[in-house]
Length: 161
Image 1 (cartoon, rainbow, N blue to C red):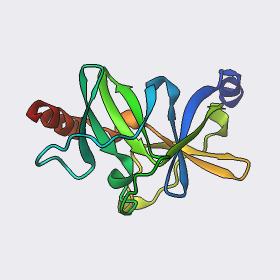
Image 2 (image 1 turned 180 degrees about the vertical axis):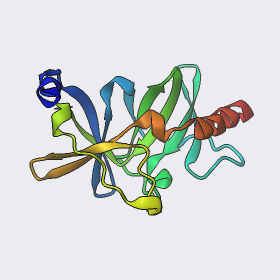
Image 3 (image 1 turned 90 degrees about the vertical axis):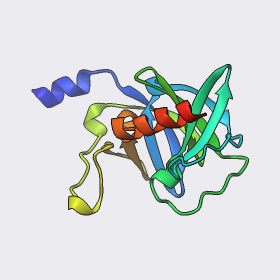
Image 4 (image 1 turned 30 degrees about the vertical axis):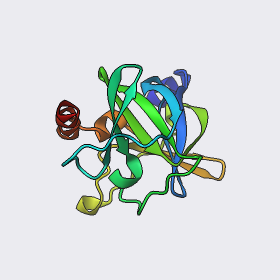
């Protein structure tokens, strides 16, 4: 009965983006805008995944490179690199990704649970996996990923600017 009730819920829309050869998706309601990449102003002593800050219509916005955060090798900044401007619990943060492909609506019953990897892999920020045709989307809880400890680092970085 619960599974049937879950399938009657409206689908949730997700923004699909790429990091390397993998596709990820985040709740579209967290997305404020998508911008082309421009080099941010670097901040001394910032963690490696915080590239710096940009001025977005008068607001200072920290820029986090998700490729660095996920340890996906050395990032390359191309004409396809974009910054997803996120609004997370009242904080505005930019996330650098390799590209944005589309918006997809997913019913909860399509999303499969994240497999257990034990202590070797931190999957706390993964909401699940969504097999769509030949694709496998990794659903990210972006607020959990930018957890309180890291957001405190972001706040300190912005304050230092």
